Length: 230
Image (cartoon, rainbow, N blue to C red):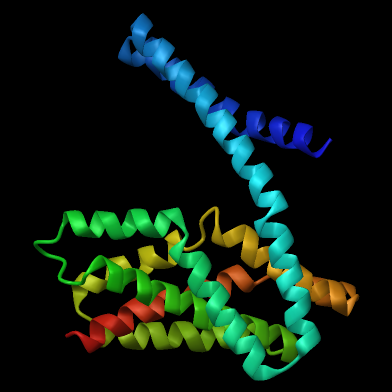
């Protein structure tokens, strides 16, 4: 039943853009038969890939994330929460495809971009890891998300003043690419796993905000890298 539901969701997601692209090809570009066959083959392959990916995420990343969230709350030790949050955030960010794509794009403009792509990946991953640890501490100690975000963005705007302009756009792109198909399911399920042990509706609401807070980390870390390498 779960697989059937995933297949239906994939079809609903891909069908609209497929129809739009097909109309563009037929009435604007003037599609040829061989191009049409390649396009339809690509749609089928994409649908199968999305389906397999979502089945894998549902049975691996989400399940593991919920379990990790429960274990972190059960231990209830500050050093344990920080260390696990850092390790998990670092690991899933390194595995995030969109982060790899951004780092490869930076390599293509290597004449103007003077930071090694591996240093960039490590910097972004550390940013996610540190702020994921902060997000778990916020949940555990019921710290206001609003206050943390205000302070974080105030620090971001402060660093913008001293950071080289080459780093600004890249820093904010880094915050976006870390909310990809690998990091989002795991981080969300991590928060849900924590909330499940608390048992109250209010705590369930508090499990959200992990993604928003974690995405601040890469922006800060890349800006800080720019300031340090100035």
